[in-house]
Amino acid sequence: MSAWSFAISKRWFGYLALVVVFAIVCCLLGWWQLNRRAEAWQEIDRVDNNYAAEPLPIADVLPKLTSFSPDQKWKPVTVSGTYLVDEQVLVRNRPFNGQPGFDVIVPLQQDDGSVFIVDRGWVATGDEQDSPDSVPAAPTGEVIVTARIKAGEPTLPGRSAPEGQVATIQLDDLAKLTGAPTYTGAYGLMVTESPGTEVRPAASPKPVRDEGPHLSYALQWFVFALLAFIGLGWALRQEYRVVNADDPEERERAEARRKKDAARTRSDAEIEDALIEDALLDDARR
Image 1 (spheres, rainbow, N blue to C red):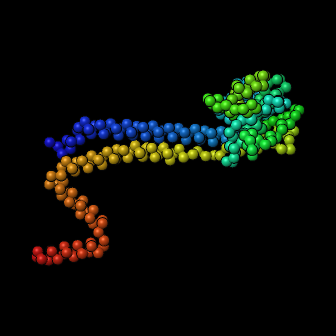
Image 2: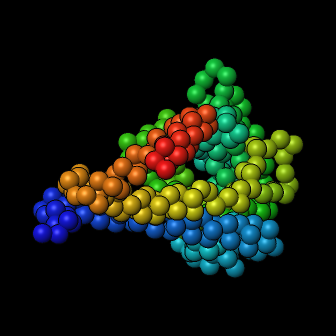
C-alpha cells in the first residue's frame, strides 16, 4: 500500500472540495474588486474629460427632457430662464467637509416652458433646528446658469422628509412639484449664475481622482485563494508524517527536523558546546 493512500479518501476529497469552493469565492470577490476599480477609473476619465470642458447650450447636450448618457456626467451646460423660487426644496442629509447640511434645489424655467432642476449648492444645518438658519435667495428675473450635469438619484424606500424638503434628488418626483415639462434625465450642479447674488450656497467640490483600494483588495483575495491550497498541502504533509511515523526513512527525517528546530532555539554558546562535545567524541572513537 502506498504511503500516500490515506489521501484517497472521502475525508480528503471533502477537504479538497471545501478548498476549491473557498478559492472560487475568493477569486469571484477578487474579480468583483477589479470591476469596481474599472468603474472608478471610468469615473476618473469622466472627470478628466468633462469637468473643465467648454459649456454648451443645454439643448445641444440634452436634446430631449429624458436625454442623458453616463459619459456626459460632469459636462457643463448653459441654461437661461427664471428661477421658480416658490418651488425651492432642500435635500436632506448632505454632508460637506464633515458637517451635516442640505443641498438647495431650485427649478429653472426656460422661455419655452421647460424646467431644468438646478442644485445651487450646500447650506449647513441650523444651530438649534433640523433646517438651515438661512438659505441664500436665488436671483429673480432672467438668469443664465452654468451647471455640470448629473443623473438623478433613486428613491430611498422608507425615507421621508418634512414639507419643503426631500430625501433624494429624484427627478420624476421633482417634476411633479413643478407642474411643467421637466428634464428628468439629468439635473445640474450650479457653477455660476448671471446675474448672481452677493451670497450663494457653497459650491460642490471637484471630485477627487481616487481609484480607491480595489486593486490591493483584489490581490488579497487572489492570495487567499492560493493560500488555501498551500494550507491544504501543508495539512496533507502533516498527516503523512503522522500516518508514516513508523517508517524508518520518515523517522530519520523527523529526527533531522527535530535537530534543526533545536538548533534554531539554542544560543551561540550552546551550539559551540555541542560542537566541542562532538569533536571530543570523535577523538575518543579514534
